[in-house]
Image 1 (cartoon, rainbow, N blue to C red):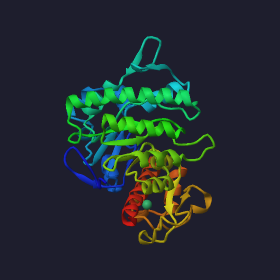
Image 2: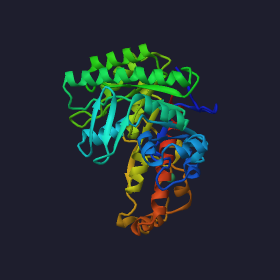
Image 3: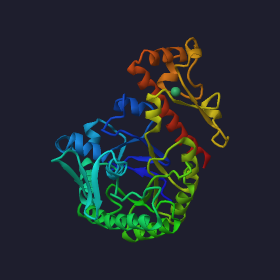
Length: 359
Ligand SMILES: [Zn+2]
C-alpha cells in the first residue's frame, strides 16, 4: 500500500489527502497563502475551465499552473470530461459524445472538441502532480446496455490516454496517471472496467460516475467493488467525494485521495462544519454524528462572544467571535466568505489528520 502522495518536485504528503476545488486556479475568495495556512496540502484545478478561460499562453509562460498561482503544495487536475458531459447530458448545452471525443457547441459557429489526447496533453502542460484520463460518464439511470457502452468507450479512451502519457513520461516516474472506473450500479461492469484498466496500466483508479443512487443514497457498493478488485499498489481516488462521513467510510475501504467542492461552496453559503467536540484532541470520528453545521447569521448569534468552534485552530476561530462573523455575513461582506472558507478547509485538514491517527 502506498503511504504518501508525491509531487513532481519530490515533496511528500501522507495519505489520506483532500483537495479542495481551485477550479480556475483559485479557491474562491482565498489566495494561495490563505489555503496553505488552513493546512491544506493540495488543490484541484479544472482542465475544462482553464482550457477555455485561461488558455495555454500563461501556463507556458509560468511553466505550469502551480507557479502561475504561486502555490507551493500539491496540485492535481481532472480530465475536464465531467464538466463538459454535465453540460451536454443535463441539456444545458448542445454537444455530442462519440468515440472521437466530446464536442461542445459554445455558439452557433464555435465548438470545443475535447479528446483523450488533448485532455492528457493539456494536463501535462499544467504540470499537475496527478492527472486523470478522459472517461465516458455512466448516467445513474442508464440501462445495463447503455452502461456497458460507456464502459467500452471509457476503456478505448483510457488506452489512448495512456499512449499519450507514454510520449512524455514513463509510468511511475511522472505525474500519477489515474484511470476512471465507470459502470454505474452494475457491479459486473465495475469489476470488468477495473480489470481492463489494470491491464492497460495506471498508477491508480478513480471512482467514476455519479456516486449517488437513484434513491438518493451514497453508492458504497460500487466503491467497495473497486477497492476489492484493485491491485494493492494502486492509488484509489474518490473523485468528487465528498461529505466528511463519506470520506471516513471510503478511507476505511482503502481510498486515499479525495476532492470536493463542498467545504468551500458551503462556506460561501453560510454552512460551517463544526466538530461535536470541545477541543481538537477530543474529536471522535467513530461517534455516529461527529460534526454538525453552524449557520452564522441566525439571529441568536449576533451577540455571542465565542469562537465558531473550540475544536478548531483556524484564523476565524482563533481571532473572531460568532457575533462578528454573523455581522459580516449580514452585510454581505466578502471577508465573511473568506473566513468561513478558511474554517471549512481547516475542518477538512483536521479530518485528514484524525483519519491518520486512527489507523
Ligand atoms: Zn475554525
